[in-house]
Image (cartoon, rainbow, N blue to C red):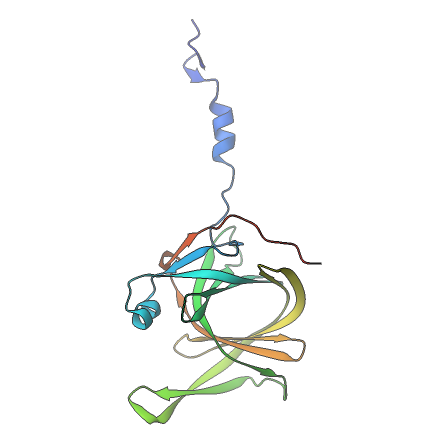
Length: 207
């Protein structure tokens, strides 16, 4: 006797179910839609907001594609500030990513070539009249295609990324686009510090 949906004790729908189970799910950190809400619960967010988690709205998505490079820099805002969530694909893996939290530390036109070692100065929190120097060492230079997406649409550029790090693993990434430099400084955070609430995809394609 053949029971409904079964033959010799085996499900007739087993193969179909196996195929469905093997369908890869899109990583929630990849190509996040504009206007999505992104909640951060890292230590820096707590120190700056006093909240164990804080929600931001995604306003601009930057996607960098180069040799052994896939990076997203998500510019996210609340009512008072803008921060950047960085998402880097880990080379050699299929779908594993590292996450980081950044701010834009400055922008300027390119003058002299960027040095191998760069020192940035920040206010001393213990003495307003003093500054603390932080030394960054360049690790690599990566050529990449940059796709910038916002509510207006998309634009593509060719860029260079100059990657720096300190002995304490503080990060600096300098984006060179044409003759314009954008300085990002940041720290690694855990993927578990990030929660994404996707918006409905309504992005336009730029001309």
